[in-house]
Image 1: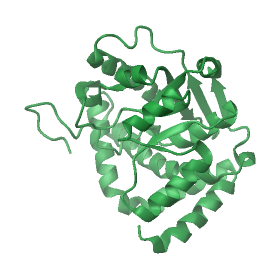
Image 2: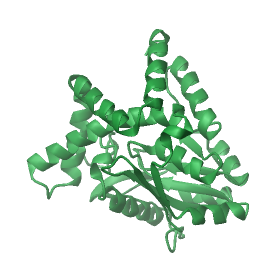
Image 3: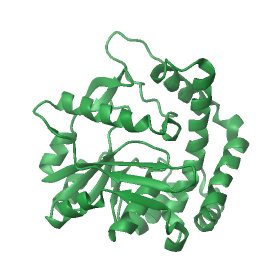
Length: 292
């Protein structure tokens, strides 16, 4: 997007940040309807993913789930803007957080915490709400945008809420943050072409990063699962777990498989809020053809 349109986007962000929650969600659904013809590629990817992962559903149910996930992706874009620009009063009372004591205990020992999550459509808003409850910023690992103008605005917006973001390729920066005793939100459920193994995700072999245990070790950190969903009333239910027994093991592939099993269980709670529009299965095992 050219810088010419940045003032318009900033105006939308200001508005989205100040709307009441029910109006912000309604606006997101309306935008999805308006943008539907332009979302053909994302709709196609979502339908392929849902067909692969939910073969027991009938075709009409799979179509509804895939389309609902695309709507949630558009709604999630507004939730992202709310995460960056909403005043605290606009978000007050929107989160119910379970397991915050696990995070506080680890941070109280001076350890960094890798908050392991997945690519749901409202991740950064959940991180903002967690930071508000914790009383300190929670760092995020992000993919840098190719447009330099947008990336400058993205980074300024994120830094004001979470502190400086960490690029997903900045392994040293991530390890430094953990060694400094910071909480960092991290996910490894997108398609990877390096340091990966093929492990099942909804029964489909998925290229999954195997380096996470090494990041935790080098960062002298602990891993805590970090899950969240938006309920029908528009409030967010956030859960921090104590950790997975026996994780990490001495087998990085089995550790990656455990992560995928845990994530799958959580996705099944609210499958329409997962980012099915991402080409999760782009990289295929040797001998298997493309699915997209």
